[in-house]
Length: 190
Image 1 (cartoon, rainbow, N blue to C red):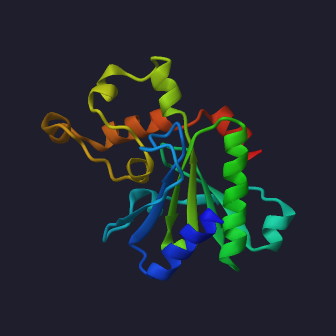
Image 2: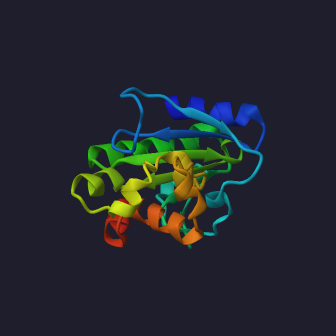
């Protein structure tokens, strides 16, 4: 029901620049309770412009008009859900996928875009890598905790020197640290 309400909010806003985001536990959710964030930016997020490749979906999802794809040429591996028929079918598909991720202890972020017609699901591992000491000191020093808006492509840098030295390569390195490995992502898709 929560995802249905979030999708309905995005649909009712009727503005493609109004987005709704969600950060699960383990992905820099600021408080330990269910809440969504709304964001208006009069420009497409970089992730919204990335090409996709359709992946196998269950017969029930196909019957309900839900198409699942994966992002191509983006540093964070992601699934993209698109609903042609009803918000309810789309929200059910997303909610079921999120529940499976939770049961497998995989943190995730969700970005609802295109007036609720397209939803990006980012399973991620940044906090786990950080806890194991696997994130470079250079990236840690930026103090950027990549949650949904950063993963979508709007990265707020807190220090002048990071801003002045920011490059696309730096942003991609940061985002690549968030992403599951190819093998882990294959398991998520399965």
